Image (cartoon, rainbow, N blue to C red; front, side, top):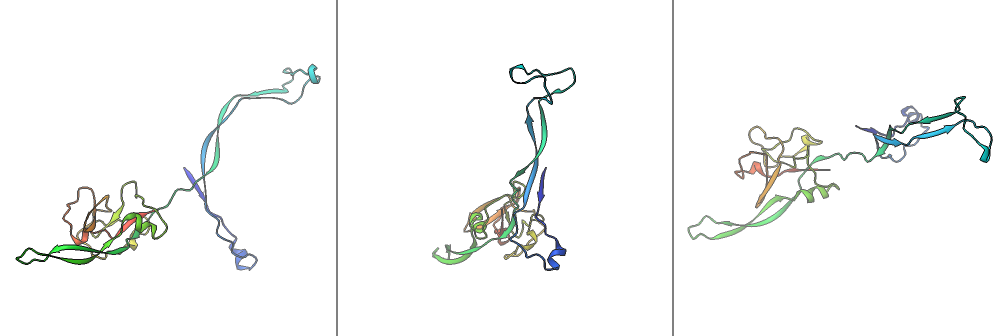
Length: 198
């Protein structure tokens, strides 16, 4: 179990104007760990000195402590806290059929979500997985937990209930977000709108 300790400042002192707000200290986390303590032999007194010294067991002045493991609280790195981040978008030019009888094609520009790595980097974070599996959100894969899940912007709208957050993606012009077992029909509401970062 990791224990989190945040630096606290006396509010009374702040209100009294006796303190100025210092730079916020980083949170510290502690964890109990087993530490080996070797056997120890100590004597509180002795008879004689130097080469003539002897340990007196008759009056209990010498004591042996067996080796053991003690629980010691040590400082450890604090766990990383992830959150949902709305995807950034970039323009992408694609080639599509023009629908004419000649079977010709034309180009068009679409707005697509940048990758998880790019979106996370835009806010100084790195790609991560919520609960070791969830990475993306879409209009059909709407997370209901994780920091800032309620700040996700569903720019393509929403549809149906929800599969929760998605666990995988595919790219077919747009980047699509899929939950486990979800039908992959490439609807607009399947497009990625947010990524999980930490």
